[in-house]
Image 1 (cartoon, rainbow, N blue to C red):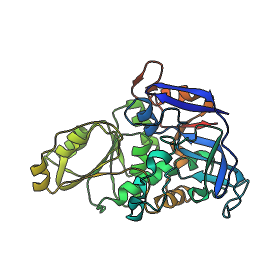
Image 2 (tube, rainbow, N blue to C red):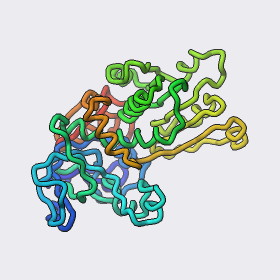
Image 3 (cartoon, helix red, strand yellow):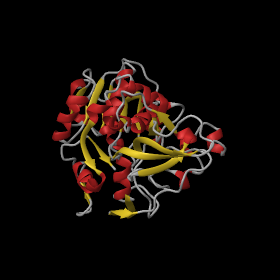
Image 4 (cartoon, rainbow, N blue to C red):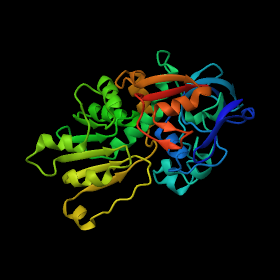
Length: 345
């Protein structure tokens, strides 16, 4: 089968790979029908997030069950499913202390990072990481379950009330999903995106109670009498933490979810004196995957509207270019008027 294989930074290609072996025990083989291009994939390609050389990329996916192991009980051949890629063993110290998203086996089991992912026609996983799709949920929208579950996980780590002034930095799929999750919790706010083309896309898909702005300064100008006006900032870019900290009100919260290697100086005393909270969040946790699928299936989050482009797997370079990742030129730039790009193996 042909799969998108990563070698090292800026080196990846559509390569012939052996099909996964037949399922044993509780294993399930899924024919991948849709897999989204994620910011993590861009980080891996650009060398900002470590991945295993030779790994098949991709982790946001849905498809059909084509084979099952002998002990599988809850799915069967023909079922339409979405894949939870956040494998956890359930037995290590981190799993047993409520940190399954940091399972100690993650270095060998992380889908599309340390273990083969879903940018391929076939993917093998285990039964407990599959969720059956309702008949009305398509594969493309289902592939957004994983990033939405990450947003649910992150929002659950914040202390929220509807009156808080809230900003989400970055108008990519993750930023839009965070805005929808926060809107569902009763918060109104602003999504900040510097790309004019993507701002227009965001205005079409973000919750109608939210506004879209070009910069943090533009947002803060609405509260000119308050030097530090923001209560909650979610940074999906991985680049704006330093600026965001200067805008936080006393008792403000900064949630960091962008996987960029970016350092900022911290005034530890100032953080303590202003009662600021800085929190990181990655992957899904505490049932957030099931919650995310419910939000999509119930129409609370209009996942289908976020999919701006659909391409065959062989056109993965074109898909990456649409979100600003030019593999040939080895550079990351602004997205070319795209939001979520879905590949179809």
